[in-house]
Length: 253
Ligand SMILES: NC(=O)c1ccc[n+]([C@@H]2O[C@H](COP(=O)([O-])OP(=O)(O)OC[C@H]3O[C@@H](n4cnc5c(N)ncnc54)[C@H](O)[C@@H]3O)[C@@H](O)[C@H]2O)c1
Image (cartoon, rainbow, N blue to C red):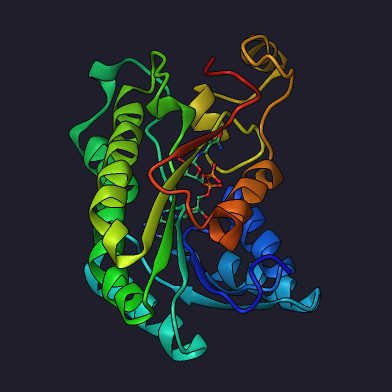
């Protein structure tokens, strides 16, 4: 049990990569708050974890809204007596297309969900971490933030901001025993965002073109990301802060 009794929030864990992270952390003994804006899906994930013998409850919150994030943190502290780890996983992208064709509304939404969420999480979770004499942020960024490709420009930039902000926070919050790290997954064709990243259905032609760029010869899975997350959440990573782990089969080399 690598994260036994740790109190962990996973945002956007009603599906996709976040769902995999919530399951994996619960398997290793964490008490998980499954968060999502979609209550029906989030409730199902929490129930599925409990059905396997894990500890999880759902809390609906929109990570772009300060009052919601405050309530999310307070709920974790009330339910578990403390907060140890926040996994900022909720994310969104505009559809893959030329930068000049992305509307201002879409741009604002990308930055609100991917980046403002990190600000709000920091504002509200750090006091709880300080009360607990430490804590861990794990921010799910993307290979897009370090090796941007055409078509996802505003999304790529938002993830670059997540990475730089995480490193800055690692430097600033280290004296509080708060660790801040990122995980950069490469493309996963099986999540809610896959078709948006690909610019259409993930058909054989799109798969083959992308796969050719990944030396290990396959896409990432939610479990790949969850295993990296488990390490960063655990005490095995007690001296690891300010890093970005690429979970990308050497794509970024
Ligand atoms: N799928 C990929 O190829 C890939 C690659 C690299 C990085 N990522 C990142 O991984 C993370 C998870 O993405 P995914 O692919 O699993 O997508 P997904 O759409 O399957 O899951 C994202 C979840 O976040 C939730 N969400 C969206 N807005 C929210 C909000 N305002 N408040 C709370 N929850 C909200 C959604 O309801 C959804 O359940 C994102 O940060 C994404 O940028 C994904």
